[in-house]
Image (cartoon, rainbow, N blue to C red; front, side, top):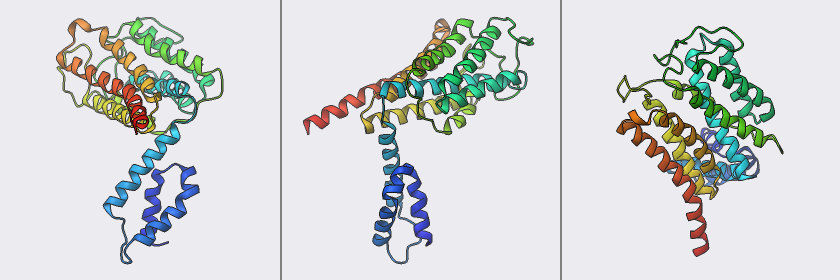
Length: 294
């Protein structure tokens, strides 16, 4: 295998495995035939085209099956990643509950919704108990101080009802998904999102604000929702809008608890997430209208 062929095959990994098995050899052959004899690296335009085409094919592949079931599962995965991020800085003080929260996300990501439900219920009950200043299962020193990622005590500005909303939403999604075939497995990249959601920096709001939003969290959320808009546009499918709406519901509940003291930065942050969610819901219908007109 020449260096050029090896690099072409590396770029083709952007495509789904089934697509590579069916068309990978043919694509590599065409690319090698069109390349100059002395080339050892793909042209920038070719590399960009292969990466973009691979992502488009992955989106079309992901759009199979029931849109509402897949959207519920994707939304539950995103919200559960947020819940694990809320637990992560306190894992040193709550090792058992940090492990249970990680197991809950693992089961959700792997599509094991019936297995995930008891883990979500247990960690949710403990989180609500901590937010309300109560003891559940084991004795916990309150308030719970972080070990890393953030300087704020756990749920210092969150009411028990607000904490319960996120876990309750995940439980409702899992109950709805437990009837019927198991959802598809999700990408391991969801685990990489957790530290960015948990990290309190870089700061761009005043330190004394009741509910600070870090730049790392905002950048990640905007990037993921932007991908949801693009995927909805490519596939003409509403599942990404449903997932985004579920995530936005939890964020709105967290911000709404402190509505009287929200700053313009908070409102701009929420407005950006709401705009991207609305776009993810709108663009599939716009794409279908253009197809009909053509």
